[in-house]
Image (cartoon, rainbow, N blue to C red):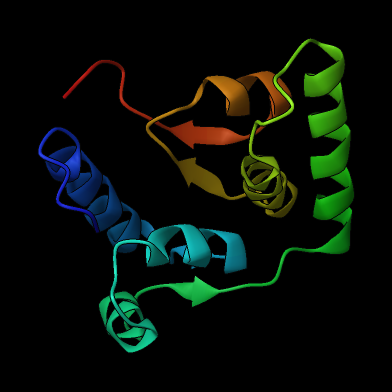
Length: 124
């Protein structure tokens, strides 16, 4: 949603492809992260549209798995300031069998090895 001159085109193509192949699921954490580019919640909700993105709660099993992955990350020397929300997002997608669209796949690949990731191979 941001007007990122480097990634907007790549992201837009991937989102369109994902919509054609099925539904796109977001949880409250993704919703919060995306909201930073909108002035109002109404504008965000209009951009997401009623049929564009399915809103889904994070299952408790996925939350537990997120904590386990984050603990492994910390024990491996990961920075304390690392955002736990990324682990919730990864665990949610992995637990439900979803694909995850991200431009930063390294952490997800390390801590959620069975997660299907859609990421750029190189810079766009």
